[in-house]
Length: 229
Image (cartoon, rainbow, N blue to C red; front, side, top):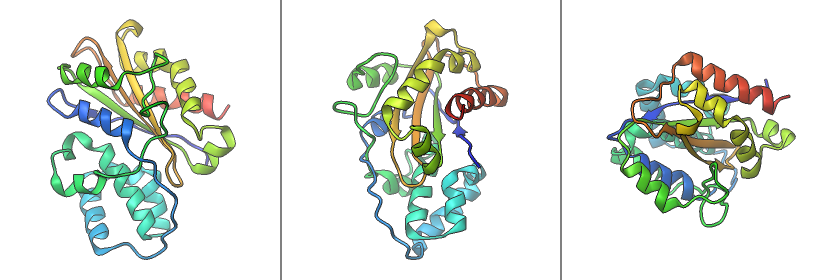
């Protein structure tokens, strides 16, 4: 079924928002090397722990793929995105972070993969802004099936940048942020069966932003309508 998955966790003001920004901007792209061997014992143990600690990870496309065909490659794809989805809780855990420390890179637009409102994003300046920010930062993850991404042209960073720019005020409104106070950066990760975008979003005024289930539904609906029009 054609659909867009949207996950919207957030990083608390005391969390590693600047580290997450650098991670999504510079991680290496995965190369599709089929590995149909069974998952390793370590992978199985880590997946069991993750789905127990974070039941919401079962809604990821990658978990569906792993359940349908439990291979080493499918396990790796699920673990990577599930860990990224819970960065705020897990970024200080050596056990978890070991698994994503050297994951493959974003499609780069220049010397990194970040894009935003401006045509050029200064990674160091963006990190500095987040290092000094005292509010919460939402880390939206937008994911499509590979066949939908290829068919509809959302298999590259430029298409996602155009989509998010077109809807940045809609996303701001869903997060209760006036357009002039809205800040965001994103990176496209062209991975496996489910290419996805990591988007960081916040208000310049700490404590102003708020995102509930209705807001998440609004964002998903607006982006879905545009992608699948």
